[in-house]
Length: 202
Image 1 (cartoon, rainbow, N blue to C red):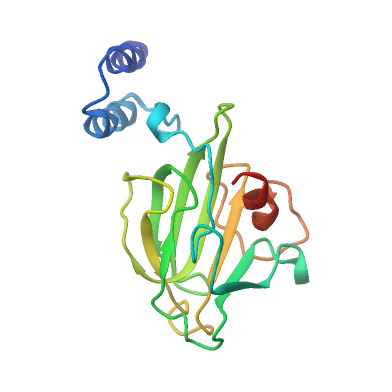
Image 2 (image 1 turned 90 degrees about the vertical axis):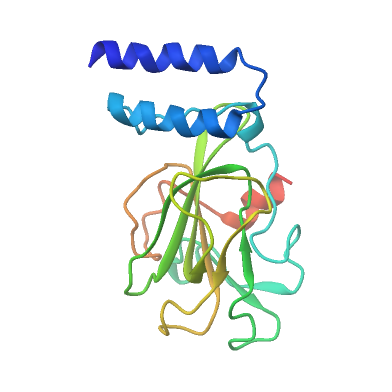
């Protein structure tokens, strides 16, 4: 195991010495190598994938045509609920966009009150990693192990398989890969107010 881990870091050094023209391919190989070495939790970001700016997940860059129907903290809500200004299901099928550069580590239908969920990991310029979570989606556009850029389409707005009127539930977490949770709760450790974060990091 020790030699495998050393191999991963040697590989990183070699990748860092290239001109970056094959960075996406290198990232794929690097993630596979890390998985073999048993260090799959340690994502390795290069400069082109650092998240230095963030946009809104709908109506980018500033959420035009949408409103936050239930903000962070309202009724113990752990995220923001984004709805189209037309109300009802008028926003059903609208595109959801990555709020920043990142890596897709989860994209699947977990049913119940969540429906289709996408989870991205973003690395900030200071090296800290955060997570964005997009729930109740109708269609998933991205798959696990993909790298995305700010503004890339990742899913469409849904109803969690008919559980709600169409909207996007967005969470931002400063503790990555936590349990999915319930979307509501009095314990807010690990969660960030999405709208405040986005406004601070435009």
